[in-house]
Length: 82
Image (cartoon, rainbow, N blue to C red; front, top):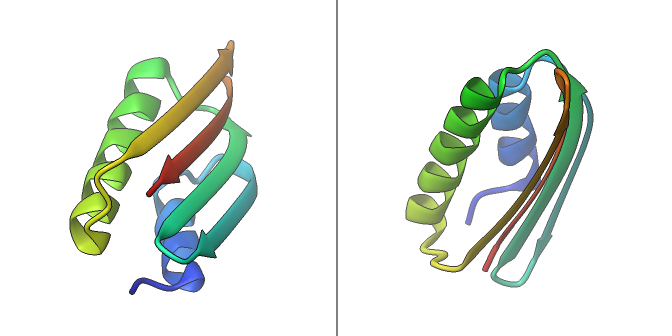
């Protein structure tokens, strides 16, 4: 199973403009939330897709919920894989 530190490291590398990051792993559920500034909608959604795809393959998690909020270049993201 992937560790919380592994997920945090990957998210920080992908989302360099992120100013807050929260990762929770419970049983077979991974919850991630982060926010920041500086991503265009297409860049943000592409990076989220790459992250979710890699994590779901690695962990074998098939159910995914993603909530994305954007205002200008500011964004907030919540992801849950189970």
